[in-house]
Image 1 (cartoon, one colour):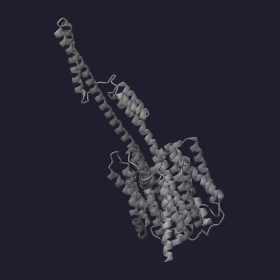
Image 2: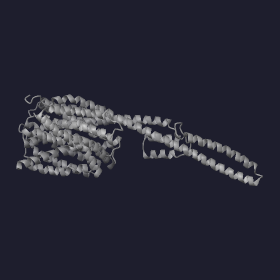
Image 3: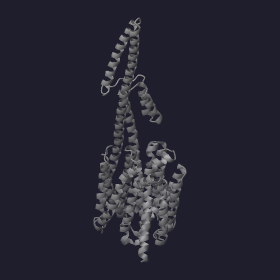
Image 4: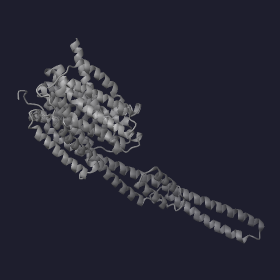
Length: 594
């Protein structure tokens, strides 16, 4: 009875660990606009909230796996959980953007401590026979968390504020700490020495930090900038020196010989692809929903949430098929479905219906869920004592896949959006040139296109009310005939007024007639003035219609160009996912005896 409770509590703890660490890789993306506004900072600065977490998670996962194998996995993961809980609490209470970024760094470091130890703890608790099944369950929670970040974040922001996306971790960490203390025994990798390779850890950390930073910030600083070039050279040198020295050590920090197993190598590449796919669906597509379609975080999250639901459906189904048949076909189908989802995203339009987007998220979620089982296929043939370092390597691969996705997709997207903005401005200027508005309105429009501010928008409204030099309605305007009719009435009234003036001048000696003529003259003048005002009102109304037409043209151009920027980005994602499809064939053996 105690053994069953211990295993149930242990599995719960492992799933919760994987869930909160993975959730925090995507949950912050949907909150960045709110955080940027809250701290009155720029999006470039607030982007470091996501960047620093993924950066440190990628860099320290492999070294922490090795350290845990050497000094004890249970004590190390307890330290990691305490740090993660404290970092989450501090993030929610941060009173400056700098403090928030610093505490996210603590979260990233502690996440790197926790993640690689989850698999060896599960093997130690449940045994090798059930390890694949348990790792599959834990992997399911990781996949669900990665896909569920945006919808959960959107809901928390809608109900409360961005602070809750961090506070939610604290009670989970407390429960997980209690379960870990009572459900797990201490374990080590008894095949390695207890000496810690500090030089190797430093070289590997520096190399991974530099290469990850280059991937994440290459577009921001410029790929050919001195900073990026120096970091790239530094990354290559640090990693080369690390590999050179590590291959000559009796106790290497990274077990490169694990890559001799083609199932481990192929599955690691697919798990890398899963990290890439998260960026495509939960980051880039979320940008489209919020920044182009104007959806609220909750609305955008609800659409992306469909992928999370499909992950929940796909994982147990894929796990059963993998155990009974072969994980190869599960991974093949999953990768193909992810590529198909990427292909559908290349066809997005501004007017795409919610139903179409939901179907696409379902395809991606189903594929993502199945492909996430590459975590299981990666470790199923690995020696039990190497489960810790193997877990660190494959989980680090997923984080590096996320880094590549951010660098490649977000970088290309930003470049495409910049080009789209230039095209939108050029088209706006062309439309303004042929629009029939007054010179003052045209000048205000030009200024607003160059720099869209509330002040410039107010200047357009003020200029549109000015009656000085109002243009004649365009030939295509419905008010053209009304305006011309008014002008004819004005001309006719002018003739009448001239005749009345002559009558008035000729009847000065006849007092009674002269008085009537004077009243008629005043009446015709008033009528002429009102007719002139009526003509101006018609011209102003025509100008208003012209401005509305112009606004519609600019909006259509904006929607078309920005959507095109996203479709071009999704084509890159589709090509990458398509290239990874053949790799899935080697994620399992044809016969288990191979």
